[in-house]
Length: 274
View 1 (spheres, rainbow, N blue to C red):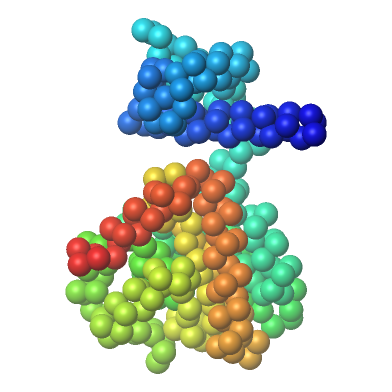
View 2: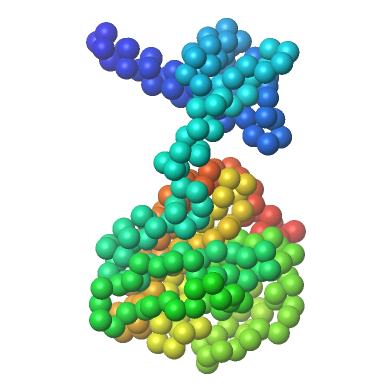
């Protein structure tokens, strides 16, 4: 019983220390004890005790006027190589797991400032007949394919409106060129969390894709699973969609994403009527 109480106390202390760390961001890089107490709901004495322990371990440092900021250990860990440096590094282990679980090609795509997207890397299927990306670094318009549609769906509403107002290029018979149909798909993608492409960009290839968010809640990239039509009927795409959403969120968390910021950005992407 005593050991169990000690364990619960230790876990509670960790939870409280994490709550304190979460209070710091670009808008509030340093805070006082009273600020932290109000933000966490803890007493000032508890916050003070935790800050002393966190300061001793480099998690927190004291600044001027008895205020506190993120400590050197956090910065050291961020630059040690143990934390992924970017989207590709964070995604690659997850892509390998997706390929092994689905036996199809898994890839990571990045949203460009230009409003296009590029393929960063892939883990290819071991099947002889498989999807293989060859256009690394070549910009692709967002309305084309599942990765582009999922990035467009979670983009700011104004960007979506601009894309929907412009002519939609038809590269294959299945390419979506009706803005009303595409707008309905984008709304569904935000609800379900993943996009599908029924051979809309590459002949004979179907795919699913889910967004990857950064610390600000912005969709900065996405993961995809793709393969030949004969192995990916509609029901299989649904199964892959349910699989890729949590995988993409794993990558998002490695980039510092939180559910609160993701949901805030998603609400903004849904348009002024939401």
